[in-house]
Length: 185
Image 1 (cartoon, rainbow, N blue to C red):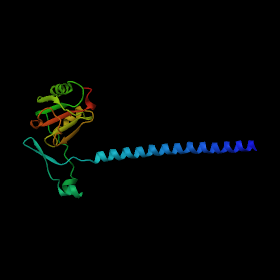
Image 2 (image 1 turned 60 degrees about the vertical axis):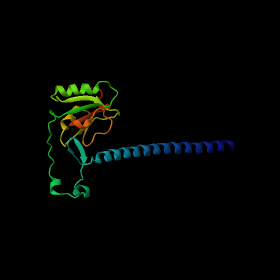
Image 3 (image 1 turned 30 degrees about the horizontal axis):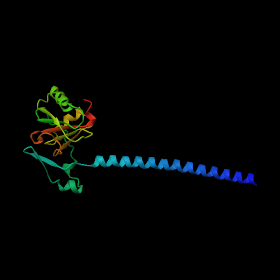
């Protein structure tokens, strides 16, 4: 009888061990699946975000109402035309390069690189906040697009520059805030 009891406990404990191992494996796979789903949703939502429509005047950027067809999603003939990929030359633009990293002299080195490539009107300064990816702020759409070629993961925005610059940015056509992703320059 004692021998049968040991067999019963052994079979029961084997079943329990197998059940727990199976549960842990399935639970781990579910966590991985939900993680992948969450990451893809975040990436999709980040790509869908849009900046407000802005315009520049007297070196001051102001927001403008978006046309009703953009708000309602209606497609018009103008909206279906191919956008022009015209880049505006920035060689003569007044450019401020701001260092948001802990790397000393980084903005100055970026100014030297830009100067060597024909951007003669640059000034280096600091940005008090640390950012990950380089951000380029311009006063008009299409200005500064050619500067994207210099940076690993920069974005161009037409809008106001966030607070944190150590200089008055209103006198510049382009403000480049160097992020950590471009600090190895």
